[in-house]
Length: 566
Image (cartoon, rainbow, N blue to C red):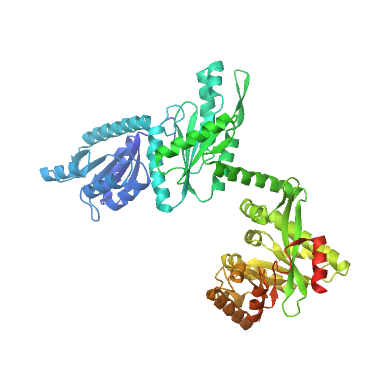
């Protein structure tokens, strides 16, 4: 659009007569209006749902949806409907009354008096623009243009209803610029306004289209974040907003460090109504301010503790990957016929210099979410193969090693190239390597999985499905994939002594494995009673605390000697 010649307004015209549309367009564009054509009432309704117009001009008589019906539906369905002008050859009282009763603001008859028509259009468009300006002033902050408190409350009510309907969480973040009052006092309110507009611009550029950012007071903004699935996501967003706000500005030769405090309440945990959410986010903001500012606080202390722990772990995990803090533990896999250890599973642990061993269920999900699992997975493969090679060179009787591969690693990492390089690096035979993947990983990437697994299998690598029985892999899936081993999920082992359903499932898995020529491994065996039952069902191998928990490499050798010499 030529900014030196701005449009007079935007108008949608609807008529099934091409000649009338042509005349309307010609007349309106001559007066510099932006014109959109619709050839039916239904098309006009759909366009008004999608776009904002300053005026709608509809013919009364159209074949599918007439002008009056279109007018009614637009007023009913569209949140910000344009005023409607009806054009028709009918000038009886009933037609006029019907038009106004439908919500039309004016009515003009054919043949059209173009001078009268142009004046009416001009009057209606100007009135609509004035109305929109008044509405904007009513619902928007004059300094930043953001929604004000009135509009925020309306959107927050709608957002909580959606969260209730969709059974999702909603976060309310109250953001307060630190030390703005001091800036206003020392440099003047006009300079403080520069800080406010800078923060507004930065936050606006960092939120999603579905989120709402409002300015509700002098130094205060409120964010509505919808469709939250995990509390960790809220913490990540709050940290991102905090980093976004923090910057330096030079005003009147003064270097100003702009930063903010954030208070967070979460629907439904911290309140089911607007008042509670606002009050609780304000209380959380107060705590953030008390602690010195430039931080975020959850209203619920436990949520805050979890969130901080999660961010702390993410930061430390990046450091751990760079500083070789990941260590491998090993758990033997027992041949249930001979009682001899037949290979082992490599399990990663994080040896934090201050916190000690951090269990994988704490850091693996974080690695998955952040993408660090790619780097972590590569280190696990390298460390496991390096240790296995050392044992081979020392003539330690280890036959094979199982390595877990995550879903994201399988999808995003070039496993074939990585394993070829690692096997070459340590001069290992691929037949000694077993990769464990979950059912869900294979089901989510069926086409890709088949291709990758065939390449790995052709190299000689053993393929095992971990946690089998929990991912609903079908017989057809198993038949077309080069699978060697099924590992029965621990949950079935736990119930084998008292749950007839678990026994039936295990019996069915045994039949399936034998039919497809696959080996079976039972995980989580902890008692002799479980072991005897597992043996009765024909399972080939077992793992569990009955023999040994996962051990560091030096301790594993002692476990191995005890098992194979007993």
